[in-house]
Length: 494
Image 1 (cartoon, one colour):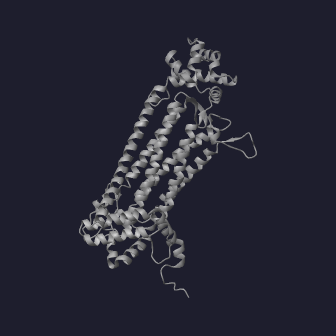
Image 2 (spheres, one colour; image 1 turned 90 degrees about the horizontal axis):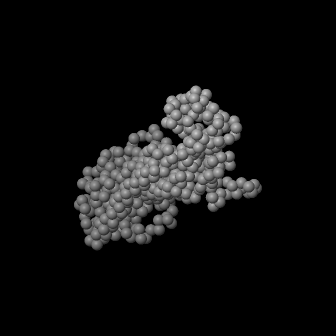
Image 3 (cartoon, helix red, strand yellow; image 1 turned 180 degrees about the vertical axis):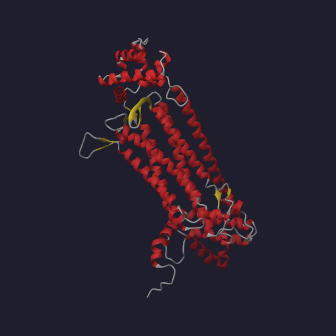
């Protein structure tokens, strides 16, 4: 008969403890090694542990790392988790001294430090991908600065602009999202170590030194908050969610633009799949993959954030191993979107013939006709709007381009203004051309080449600033790793 009072219960072992053990092996073993080394250095430097004892513990840690093939470990239930496995190995080698490493710390402060270290690696990698995407789209925007497209509002043709202008809008949002992500990464920058279970310790620990050795900006001050306030999780995943919510909207535009009826975006053959039965079909399925991967990423972020909803403000498993590990999938699917979009959009081109067809069919330059009448014919905007509307109705009924509607325009002008227009046919054609429409909109943020060029330079500056911030964080963690290696090695040499 099985003793049901012996820990762990077999079902609890297989459903909770074993999966968590596998997750620690995969995601946290190296970070736990860094925490063990840093904590040992701090204990010796503060005199909590003698130099000679510290050297013996350091040697044991090295031997455990050398002798243990982490990936091959299997959860047996003998030890509650990987942390206790390492401690048991220390005690097997050192006797009671093996338990000294856990002085003035808890799995609580260790766990949240591990989680922050694992998240910062993933978040920095994602941020780097966003900055590379921003640069790729800015370069594409410069190339396409004069490439006309039809801009849509409410799903209907609205006004002409350029592909470069459209991409500039995408870059602006992407850079703001990258800025939010960078700020969320800063939220990972303070170390929980030293909070212990929740109230710090009676030992003279040096929390600043622990933060320094592990590459953090400093300690997270309130020890209760180190364990209870998981806003570093909710803040980060909220920032990640916004990236893919916004990119998903751009991807949906690509689906619309590449449809047969619109035909504005041409997707090259390398990114098109042919139907298995209908040989005429060109299916730009990467768009669908980017769309659903964006949505999956948003959903994964929501899963993490929603798991924290209405949980107690204290230590809890709802914010720990299982949830943390499940959330990493958001970085995997999100990275795939970023990489694919960075390859997809620069490879696409605009079908000028279809753009002209839709421009002519929908009279989308007519706004500039009204503006020109206000400037050159001394009409109020409402009068000019009525003339333009009458002209548009007439050419649409005739299934003719707006540029060929001079006679209709003259008639509408006479009806509304009560006089003959001074605009000749050549001027009318100029006023209603898509090229002129774009060229005269040379205001901050407009599509005219000069205005767009200024904007693109600003985007590059913004990306560089974010890259510099990221590099500073990377330099700090790299310097910390070197400093920890030096301090730990000095223990071994004692």
